[in-house]
Length: 433
Image 1 (cartoon, rainbow, N blue to C red):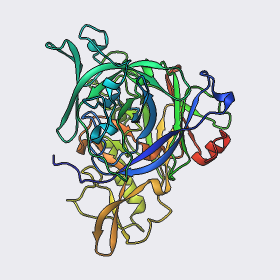
Image 2: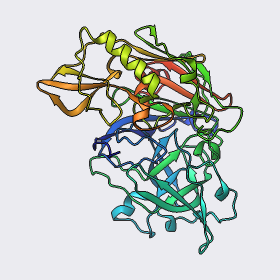
Image 3: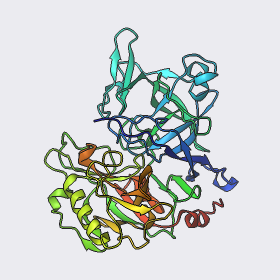
Image 4: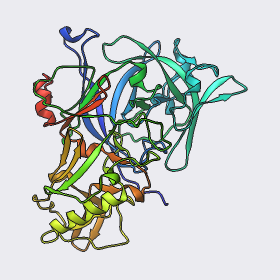
């Protein structure tokens, strides 16, 4: 399959909100602001286990790492486990090293030996391996374009906001990637899934939440527990099969998808299509590191047919069997150039066990950059066909989490959802943007 077209990547820049004196205690949750920035395509390579598309919104957190501390910017990803940093070969900065972590400049940096429990972890897609010559634990990350990044598993002191320093394992990678002077430079990735080597597990973070705004600001991330009486969260339990299955990602945030409605009409999808099969393929994952939502083939076909049926009288279909945006989005329409799609699009609702998520309005269609048919622009439904990627899971991306408070509660093994405008939530939390 040829690589997808090069498209800009959108980031949510995560800036630490300076706590008021009363909030400085380590027991208080840490509140961050999120701001949208644009960086060039390819600036953030994605692991092979992630979707291959360049359009991603990720949560980027600024951390202090090492002794003396070095400030780095890391992509916060709920769909990945191992945190990693680009490591400069020398102790000095300059050039690419200015965007990297400098291990030789830190007194607290330590390589992980082969015999350690961390080196024997089997949660990662590519488990660590022992370098016989150096006796150091090595890790490898593979990317969608076929390239790979190799490095050493190491430990270092991480400092997040006003919390106490934490020694955590991460991948110290040698491979750099392109950035733009106008974009947001990131030095690595902060893994936030439930694996043993994730930052969540190593920091013993039992609850975190975020609200991704549809504007360039007003979003936020909350690390830790906080009572939010203005947010009536509906919870759906995290799903875990009784027995290990070969294609089920047991450290992902997986929930049970029970049904899909279009314009209030239930789609005729058998329950077996929405549930993992005997191999574990078909789980539903909530992933902040993926932009759009992906459905397996049968569910996608049902959604496509009903959405096109309801919009046929007033929204012309593209009718181009050879076109698929990013090779997975082929429910596309023609809209006169310079205009937006009609406001009466039928909402799509995803039903979970105890909660639901409704996608409506301008989150339903996406304007394909550079695509025109005569005087019309091309707009595609923001649900993709997972079979065309291909992946063997349902993935709920960040685009459909906009203006929804999403809470990951590991104490009670559940995910909470509550629709709310992020600017309203920030005001209620006392964060004036």
